[in-house]
Image (cartoon, rainbow, N blue to C red; front, side, top):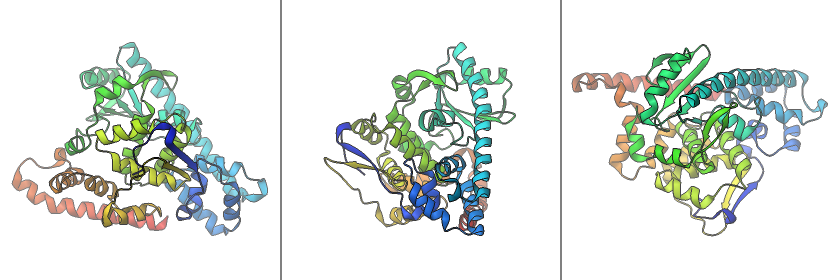
Amino acid sequence: MFGETSRARARVGDGAVSPSVGLPGLLAAPVPQDEPLRLALASLSPAGRAALLERIVFHRIDGLAHRAVERLPQDALDPWLRFSLKRRSQRCAAAALSQALALGEILDALHRSSIPVIVMGGIRTLEGTYGDAALRPLEDHDLLVRHQEKEATRMALLRLGHAEQSRGLFRRGGVIVHLHVDPLGAHRRPARQSLFPARVEDLFARAVWGHVAGAPSLLLEAEDELLLLAWYLVKHSFDRLVRVADVAHFVHRKRGSLDWALLCRRAEACGATRILGWSLQAAALLGVSVRALDRPVMQDDGPLARFLLSRVFHLRPMPYTGEALMALAAPTLRARVSFLLDALWPAGERPEEALRGAAALPRRVVQLAEHGASRMARRRRM
């Protein structure tokens, strides 16, 4: 990856955006790229501008794109594209305000019940990393509680009118809450916890009290938060540029306070060294590169991982890239096979009887193949 290093001997660079990510990368970068962005936009035809807007929406960087183009002179951008991005950014900000009000109500209720909770991503990322409600769209709220307080949290959500739609999933109108007792979703895929052990008690012990959406909440240490962002980026197979932007913007914003030696030790302790390395390589596409000055160590990822990452670095990830990369990070062949089976067909979704499971396996393979083909087809259009 980037070697064991100390805070003083790690350098976070503000470089140029990789040409492989094109205009979307210029729009999503933490460091302004005004001149190359102006030149690239000036070369677009009307059809190219429409196609660009489609890519922006697909990658969910509407708010970042609007901020980037607002820095340019008025005559440097087509009025239709500027207006479209402005409206999408405003809708993003309005939705974020509504979601923040709902989350604040939940956190206040849990605090009154003396239930400590950690908000993972969502509003926390919006506030702590971007600092602007218009920059990052929200989908749901991921709340992490300790196992012994899960039932009390569940009852609190029910009292607030959230209906439990499935295990750990609650909904009230347009507000979706995922209740977690582990940060990796290991209750459905146990192999995750065995390969990437992340102790919830340690996360809670290191967290400090602060506020999310104006309500009391525990805040993860920066090193733990970056590891989770890296995990989610790989877990979601680098599917949208906004997830890469989450890592890049976080590293850029926290570059003066991150303890890189501590980060490396924690990544190693939970088996996530390669996952962190892959995520930082992706962040470098947006001009945020991390370089160790004392003992750089590059681990050979092997031909399959290099191929998968080459697709990622051109914003064309293969279906199930995350599952394949995480399996490759497993220490043994048996662990890799076990992880892949658990990732692609979670134990909780398999028939209990062996014969029924064997009969259902071909259908599962067909479903995965169809889903992968659909994702690739949509990617080609983007």
